[in-house]
Amino acid sequence: MSNRSSIEWTEHTWNPMTGCTKVSPGCKNCYAEEMAKRLQAMGTPGYENGFELSLLTERLEQPLRRKKPTKYFVNSMSDLFHEAVPDQFLDRVFDVISRTPQHTYQILTKRAQRMADYFEGRSAPKNAWLGVSVEDRKYGVPRIDLIRRVPATVRFLSVEPLLEDVGKLDLTNIHWVIVGGESGRKARPLREEWVNRIQVQCEEQNVAFFFKQWGTWGADGKKRNKKANGREFQGRVWDEMPRIAAVNL
Image 1 (cartoon, one colour):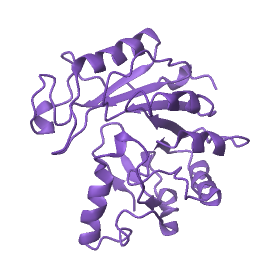
Image 2 (tube, rainbow, N blue to C red):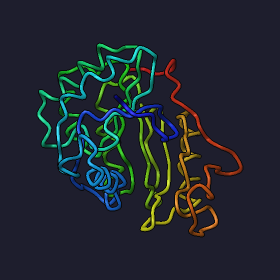
Image 3 (cartoon, rainbow, N blue to C red):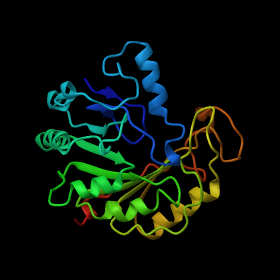
Image 4 (cartoon, rainbow, N blue to C red):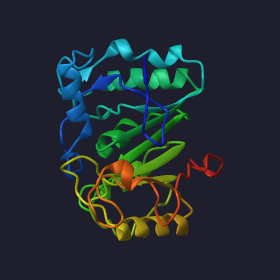
C-alpha cells in the first residue's frame, strides 16, 4: 500500500516507480537516493535495483483501494517525468488519478520541459496539482515559465533546497510556493533573506506561501539537527495551502 508521509504538505506517498538520475544542483544530496540504498540493503520490495529507475506496475492501483480522501505526493522516490519513462506509463498513472477524484495528487518534477510536452494536447485531471523544483536561478527559475504552460488546477513551486537568492519571480498563474532548506550532514546553508524575499513576493502576488523547514542550517546560520531548527520563519509557522476556489485555468 501507499505510505503515510512525514512531509508537512502532504499525507501519503505513492511511488509507482522508484529511482532517478541527477539533472541539476538540487539533486546533489538527494534524500531519495540515500533512502533507496538503505531500503535495498533491507530487502524492501521495489528497491531491488537500488536507485536505478524501476517502473512498478504492481503499485499502480494502490490509490484505487483507498476510499478516504487523501493527499498523495506522487513519486517521492523518483521523478514521474523522467525522460526514460514511456508516455504509456504516464497515461496509466493519470488514468488512476482520474478514476480516484476523491484524492488529491501532488506531482513535482525537475523535468519541466517533459511535463509541458506531455500535456500538449492532453488535459490534466482536476485533482492533480503539478509543480516544479526551483532551487536556483540557472536551473530552477526557467522551469516556472514551463509549468505555466500546463493547464492544471493547481500549479506550484517547490523552492527546496533553496540554494541562493532566486531574485525577482513572476508568479503569474502560480498558486502555491513551498520553501525549505536542505537537511543531512552535507546540507548547504539557507539564508533568512532569501526566504524573506520569496515570502514578500508571494504576498504581493497573492500566492499561498508554505515554509517547510530550515533543515540543517538554522535562521541564525548555525548547523544543528533539523528538528531543533524547526519550521518557524519570522516568528510564525507558514502553512498556507492553495486557494483553489480562486484558481483560473
